[in-house]
Image (cartoon, rainbow, N blue to C red; front, side, top):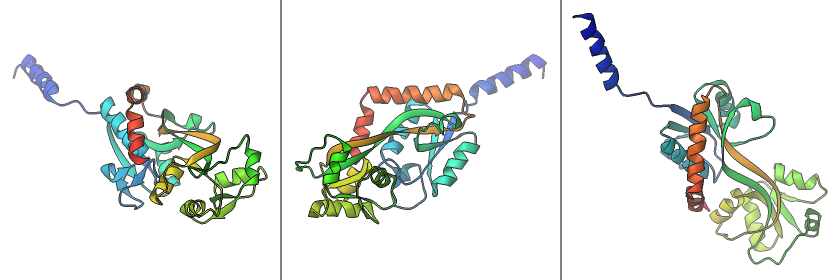
Length: 245
């Protein structure tokens, strides 16, 4: 075959062959209502993973034209290290802290997680500052950072082994306030049949991100960020949040 015909055939083959899509593997853990296995296990893939962050990232990848596989595994340390070490991997829902800033490339925020004091919907409790809470009975989760945040500031916290026990105590009038996270706490309360909790004090806000391996191309990071920003502008993030809360 003449050389020019051979080259032409090769070029036609190149045009006919589909371009390889950009792809990522996005790792996570069980953290309701942001990311959780539909069957309640410690392993799930793709549509078997539900939650605010999981649905947001699926929509973001679809809008950006990026092929994303979602995998939920346990423990967190394992998936964190994999995203840190391996190109093509990411991790969600990840708090963007000063210590982590240079370790990853970031897309977000995809959600936020507030540390709060909740009261019953019809509670008359009003706080001018955190120390006002010392007058009330406060329930919290044993060995939890949010409970420690209060005890470190001199407040007394009655701790429970499971956070849903605090919802029951609140409903029975055994505690006046519950230190937890929003929206995590709202989700737990909803499972116990309690809606409309009242925030009487916000303690701290942690914004949650998709953390991508440092070798992720900047163009891909920017493409995902643009897709997320467009979803936020269109109101899609609020629609997703409303499915779970």
